Length: 309
Image (cartoon, rainbow, N blue to C red):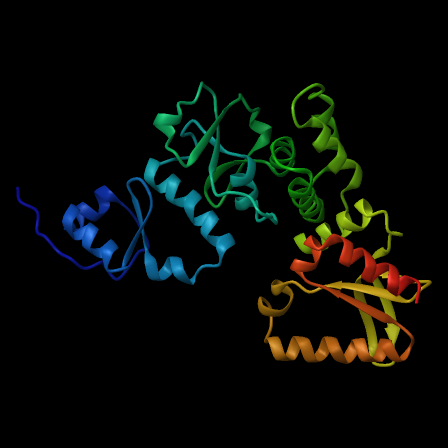
């Protein structure tokens, strides 16, 4: 039976397998033309997404979309034989990620074949107890504690610390993660895991704050208190970090702080208004952006100058 050919996408839906597009009347030439025109985007072999929907998503949401594209393309179900893990599980749990790739990580009960899985997939052979598997967005995923442990065993210290800080803030069980670490002696990455467990802080509210704290520790600068509340003439103000005796505050100014939750002009106005009231009381503010975290000596000099004013 000949299939009716079309060259337009349906109004509904954003994610399709090649077979689904074929069933909608789109042959290989029509699909290629839609990709060329920028209406379709091939996100992995055999799976396409509506490009307008993809372009509207922030980078962190795109990483999650790739996982759903993999699930959609492989027709995964809750008993499909593999579980999303490592940074893929971290994405699905909504954990902060910094500078990690978008590879899809799976735990499988048998030896994985990279050719069968695809170039964008990394398979890990392991038999997980059912207690370490949860459903997130209708997908089987390692639980929060197992996810953090797997990430810490495979990522750099700073990348892993960001994930662990956020997981603890979301309620991850630290004693359980310590118990996991106790079973991994001699394994590659366990030193990073134990270091993260020793230094993690659930009061951190962003990846930038975690990196600030780690940098202060590494540069051997006197450590401030985190999430410090002080009273001013116009109300209470909570600082990311503060040296109370010296009356020095350090604020990390990331884009999320200003652009994600409210109008930029209103957020900046209110923050500067509170800051001016505290300056009247003798406080000095150090404002740090992402780029400052990678200019370490300049960062240290600014902090020490403020502390020794």
